[in-house]
Image (cartoon, rainbow, N blue to C red; front, side, top):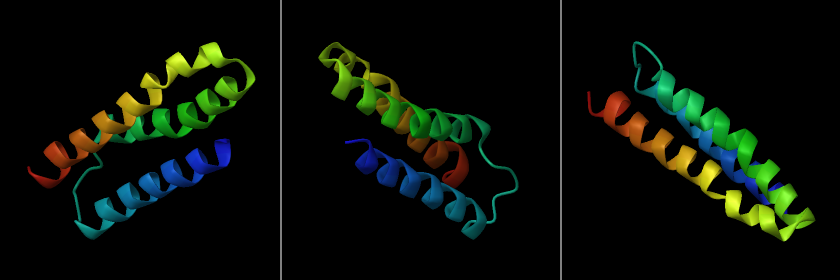
Length: 81
């Protein structure tokens, strides 16, 4: 179960890094960078914990919210400004 999240969040992080380079941004949006890292670490951890004990499925909001906020921050501060 964790392998799917590793691929997905890995592709998100790779897309973020390539987009920063392609768009020639002067600085990497720090909040987006941090939140992508939190999502990349939290998603497989929450998946693993959820497979172990069902009660941990209630923690999925942590990686999901961090990845959504990271994408929003990158679009707002990185692309639109």
